[in-house]
Image (cartoon, rainbow, N blue to C red):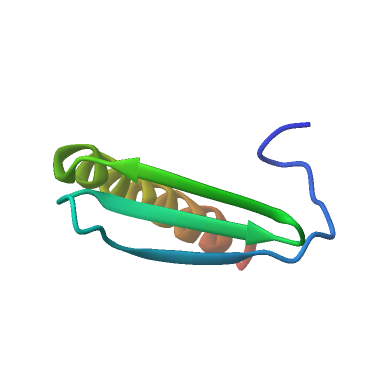
Length: 66
């Protein structure tokens, strides 16, 4: 299984600050709960990775429309 493997799983994602100054990504899928805490610096790196993935996806989508 990899990032391009599709699955029919419904999940909820919540993102917010904790009272300890961390950034929490909280994923809930059925009975599974995954809290992931990151420092603000780590969270900024994740933001950069997401922005890069967004641009790549846009570029791939625009090539498919030609």
